[in-house]
Image 1 (cartoon, rainbow, N blue to C red):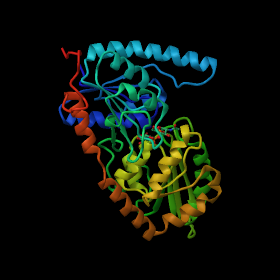
Image 2: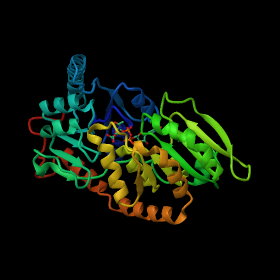
Image 3: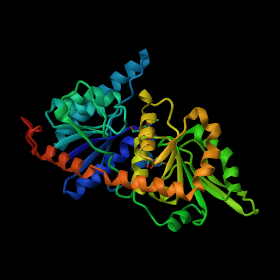
Length: 376
Ligand SMILES: CC(=O)N[C@H]1[C@@H](OP(=O)(O)OP(=O)(O)OC[C@H]2O[C@@H](n3ccc(=O)[nH]c3=O)[C@H](O)[C@@H]2O)O[C@H](CO)[C@@H](O)[C@@H]1O
């Protein structure tokens, strides 16, 4: 039995908020089962949480080709049957979906079995899954200011993205030691989302000696399968060695962010929420092929708050100069960090958690207690 089934597979940006929700609900005395995909990133991330219960659900994104549609239908059907069995066995109070291709089958199965459903959209352009599934949900959580057309507004709430308990600022020395870096040097950390970003990795390799010359060290998270990792050193203007460390996957994002004076990153909603939690300014390079260009919308919002800058991938040629200027500019970095503190203070996450708990226990007018679905 699980109080919550949380469908959160497919990318790190879907999975980590699912873990964060499970952590919060555990504090409130509820159990959760997290449903993830069979993708390598899900398996890598889940290994870090042996104390949590995970299950895998089939699913594939909808590609508009004949094999793509066949694969979508067959994996969703398989996912539906599996989810049906799980819901009957686990008897959840609520099924929560964080979007993505593994959400659909689980949400539809829950709706058919009359289990309350809630959805969460983290991006500033709602994804296809959340748009299509909103009709089955009693509640849809959206980023502040984002609308979902054709959906009963009584269902909609604005809320941020839950981040895992471990995502807290840590002592810089401890973080530097983890990767053999110097706690007293300016540091740029490169992040490419959960899959890594080749274009940013190429930029970082070319920029590392230039940054080192100005005394700036780098930690580069290349993404799984996109590099072997290792340490290189380059001289600064006095001939002192400055390190650049590459790692394929970061299992301690709080430490990486705590070490950074400045992050250079893709603008997935997960990374942005974590940057806000740890309080780190960023130069954001949106993934240009994200659905409906949602990473640009995410990045623009972060920049509009004064927390960072946006550079399009087509302008990577100017990125090194911009990063060198910014990471050595104390006044600007301090101003950006204060803006981030203001964003963090405006968080409505506690309200969202209360609301989810109420939905699960039958406590709101818009969410009547589970009709015709009896908890055993
Ligand atoms: C290419 C693509 O479609 N990306 C989407 C994907 O982002 P994607 O999952 O790539 O990136 P996000 O920034 O949203 O989230 C990454 C998550 O993985 C964690 N992490 C990442 C790398 C690592 O080495 N270790 C680690 O733990 C991060 O701490 C974070 O929690 O889902 C997001 C949420 O729908 C979307 O906003 C993104 O546009």
